Length: 507
Image (cartoon, helix red, strand yellow):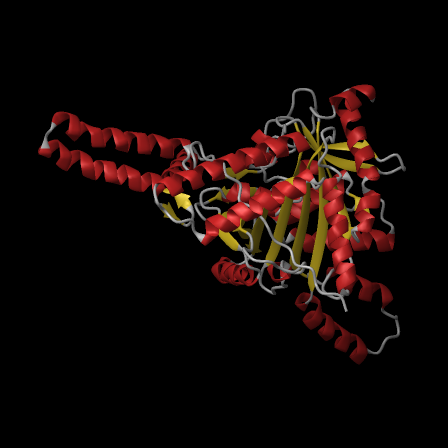
């Protein structure tokens, strides 16, 4: 029997202005250092009594950490949130109050917060079907979303697990090229309590007219108990194309949004072989109404029941007036409100978390399973966003990191300070990653965001505590996205490939 393969070596991204300090943190250190020089220049003990405590406070604000964030970062979050509250930008009302376009009588698509700029376009897949494309005019990106199924890893042997993980790695590596127009790949999975609508619809269709009353009553009781106790998992794969990177291909296809969508569809079809090798089966590339449905049911979980029953009825009765999915113009919530630690949308409350630290040791391929463990009182969503890094940029980034680490080690050696085991491990992991890159492996930036959604606010904190316990069991350190819960929701609860900073898209 083969030995299970373990995985590890994740590195936290460093984005400090100077070392580990942010721009405001560096300014605080500079101001504190300047204050220390004032009593020296004046030669005054009275000035020292004033300046030294103030300088220590500035150093504490710059270097102190609370839940992984420095004081200046907390202050920035709090100020930004309070400004949003004061200007009522933390509140959102539905498109019924949005102004209509001068060139169209249609109600504009209306989404809150960072999603307000998105538009859902319609494109042909070349096989007689339509595909919904999420277009971000600000970032110049086009995203297609596929509903996928997979056989899983827990119940297969070790060789199949290793083969599927290796195929997924090869799929990601195939996009780590200088000319790849794909800038983001995201995997989104939801685990939600089953509403029982599909089960009830099937039973209604198969009831015999002369069925005994006692048998019908017994079946009704079974459906009442078994239906809501089950759990449903939905898995989506999102692929994002950059118009800037694909400008020549778009120009060759005629230019404009239609050509960009066509290029994205072509890329999506080309990657299906790689997905199949990883055990992923593409069920469908979501049409505009199906894509809007995934957005709508995230904002309003109660709509899941109505939409499932309507789709089942339309399929059974063949009603032409009943169309599956949701009109893209109605995908957003009717009302949403962002609080400091929660996000309220329609009849639900959500708390979002970001994975800040991945397992420090080696783990098996199934280590994330506890995160999506079914819960009867809450729905969970997990989004993992991958950004392939171009080889030239990866070489520059890794070389820059190596120089920073080597310089820090030399400074510590001159100061007579011993190197810690954590520092040795980080240097070893960075060296191994650079060796893998030089041998042809790809480098990707990755983030993961988790959302916990309930329809009863009294169950919210209990559901969050359960999720944090499951994250600890998986070896993850998660952090609540204080002051940015609306952004966290758009990243974690929706399959729209949001999550990584836009400033690095143009690698």
